[in-house]
Picture 1 (cartoon, one colour):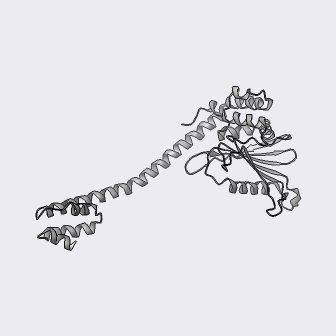
Picture 2: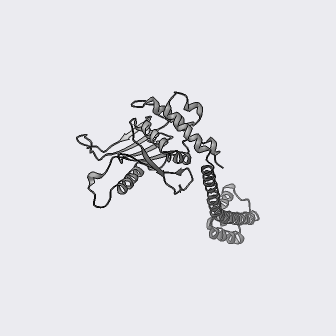
Picture 3: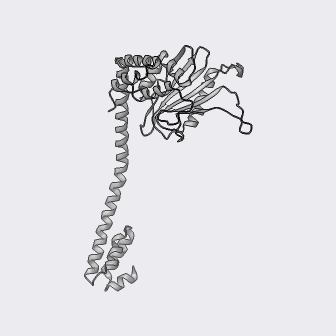
Length: 299
């Protein structure tokens, strides 16, 4: 089973989504991440639970909208191997479709941010953050479509353009304790921590987490059982065929031993044959042969 709810860190997708539904936590995380003042936000998390095929993680999208109608899609990403760039493309389309009403001018589209907070380096360059915008390939000027895709790596090494407060947030995400929250006397991190501690005392949230963990565990067991059963039948059939072939090979060698000394090379050749029709033919041949040489010449 999974970790105790009270000891979860904010890198846990369930707790992260629950925490960022708190609009003060969401606003403070966004302000630290983007290093700018953000007005009051409205936020919510997806209510649908998404499981990938091998249960590496649970995905919760957190959507937020500030007073200027700037939209934010924030995700906690713990496992590598997913196509994050194309997921960004899809999420961008979702944000745009939901923010523009039929008949409205495209100028009504507000700025938007797709933000992935990763517990790994998504591009292998050692950076804490990767910011992407649309640029002209030839002339190098910005398209100006109002979109940004930002990937944070909580384990980066290059501190260029990274604020001490963002580094503190990364440490707190990985170890969401009072000790880490109080490391640098940062009011925003301390506020986030107080609200996270309050959420951890919420029995309904804890029950939801336990239900989710039980579902993942039972689903994983079910799939493992199905896989084992699907593998067991062909394996059993293969073993039965192999044993049958081995028995026929032994009978062939025994018949040949009655008419002469069976060379080791010939014995190995017979033992290595797995095709039952070939072994059956050799068995008949061994029963009729008057010498080892005759058998070998007609194999």
